[in-house]
Amino acid sequence: MSLAVHDRFAPAQSIADAVLYEGYVLYPYRASSAKNQVRWQFGVLVPPAYAADDPSERAAARTECLALAGLDATVSVRVRFLQRQRRLVEVLASEPGGSVWFEATDRLEVDGQVHMAWDEAVDRVVDVGPLPLASLVCGADDHTHHFAFPGGADTEALGRADASDAGTGSEDDSGRAEGRLVRRRLAVEGRIRLGAEQADGPDGLVRIAVTVDNTAGGDTAVDRDGALGQALLALHVMVAVDGGRFVSLLDPPEGAEEAAAGCASDGIYPVLVGDDDVVLAAPIILYDHPAVAPESPGDLYDATEIDEILALRVLTMTDDEKREARGTDPRAAAIVDRCDGMEPEAWDRLHGTFRPVDDLTAPRVEPVFPAIGVTDGPPEVRWWDPEVDSAVDPFTDSLLIRGVVVTQGSHVILHPSRRSDAQDIFYRGQRATVSGVFRDVDGADQVAVTIDDDPAMDDFLWQGRYLFFYPEEIEPLDVTEPVQDRDGAR
Image (cartoon, rainbow, N blue to C red; front, side, top):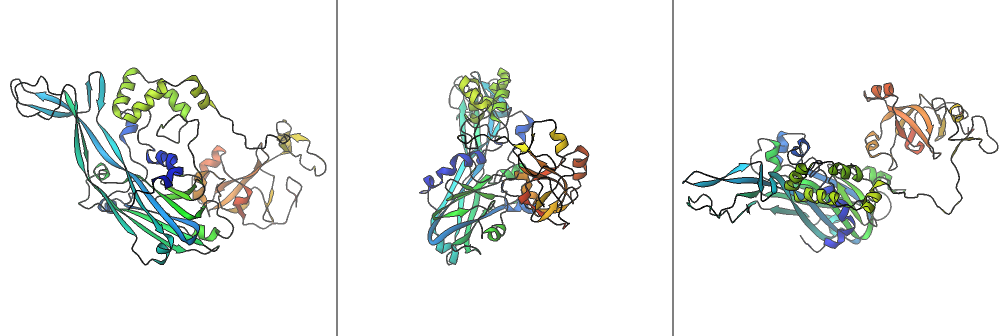
C-alpha cells in the first residue's frame, strides 16, 4: 500500500468528502434530536458475523467499472470510510471527605461551553497502487490488500486541571477538573481485492473490479449499535487510471453497451469524475461528473437538502439550541457559526443562480405547441396561449417511436438513460402501460407511464400521477397500423 497517490484523486475530493459525511450530523444539529440518534445509514459494512445474522446488513461491497486502456496503463485505488469513535462525557463526583470519581452524563456545561455525549468519526484512507493493469488482467499475482486500524482510548480534561489523579482519594480536589471527555474506538479490519479482465467491445476495453470486505472477527454483536463499533462507515471507493480513460456505465458509447450492462456492482456504484480518468463508486445515487455547487459556502451534511433552506432554519434556532449544537460536534459548531455570520452577498448567491444552457448569442426561438391538423406553414398556437388546451390532448395524442405508434394504452419496455431521474434506474427493463403523451414548455416530448407489476401504481392513477420518460427510453411492444400523430407524421 502506498500513500503516494493522494493528488491523483484531487478531482474527486470535494464530492467524495460530501459522500463520506452524508448524514453525519443533520439539522437541527443537536445530539438530543431524534434525527441524530439514528445514524450511519450509508455505505455501512458490518463485521461478517453480524451480517450473517442480519441479512439486511452487508459485510462487503463491490464495484465494477469499464476502462479503455492499453495494458501498459496503471491503476490506483483509494478506499475511504469512517471509524466510529464514541465520545463519553463524565462529570467529577465525590463524597464529603472521601473518594472522588467520574461518572457518565449526557450533557455537561463547563466555563459556559456545553459538551454532549456523541459518536464522532475518524476519517480513514487506504491507498493501493499504482499497479500495472496488465498484472490485474493476467491474474498472475494475488492482488489482495489487508488493512487494519487499531482501537484505543483518549481522555480530554474539562475545567481547571488534568483529571488524571481522579479516584486517588486525595483530600484536596480544588485543582481537579470538573469533568472529562473519554473517546473510545474499537479496532476495524478489512481487505481490498482487485481484479480485471478484457471485456467485449472496442479494443482495449477492460472491466476492473474492486471488492472491499470487513474482516473483523469476534462474536456477533448483540445489536446494530454494537456492530457499528467495528464497521466501515460511509465506505466509498475511487479508482484512477493512467494511460487510459473510463467509460460511462450510465451512458456507454456505441459498442460498449453490452459490456456496461454486464458490470455488476453491489453496495457502491461508479460514476465518472474529472476528465474521465477517475471513477467514484459511492453508496448513494450519483450521476456522472457530480460536483458541489460553487455557491455552497460549506458542508451541511445533507446533500439532498437545499443550502438556503437549511441555513435559514439554523437562524431560527434558539441560543440554547445553538449552544447544544456547538457542543455536539465541531462540524455542527462550524455550521452554526457560518450561518450566523453569513454576509448578504452569500445569501444572494444561495437564493438563486441562473446557469444558461443555450447559446445566448443565437436568436431566441420561443417553444410552440403546433395546432392539431396543421401540417403546412408555421405553428399558430403558442404554449402560453389558453387555446393550447384545445390544441393538445396528451390522452389522445400519439408519437411515432421506433416505427411504432405509441399512445394511451400502448405497452412498452422502459430503458432509462442518464437523462432520467436517478430513481428511474430501478425501472430498467420493466413493462409499463402508456397513460399519455406530453410535451413540456421547452418543446420536448415525454411519455407518461405506469408500471404494470407495481401495485403502488393504482394510487398513482387515482392521484393523477405518472412516471415520465423520453421517447428514446421507450421500447414499444404493440404493433399497430400507423396513424397520424400530433406532428402530422406517419
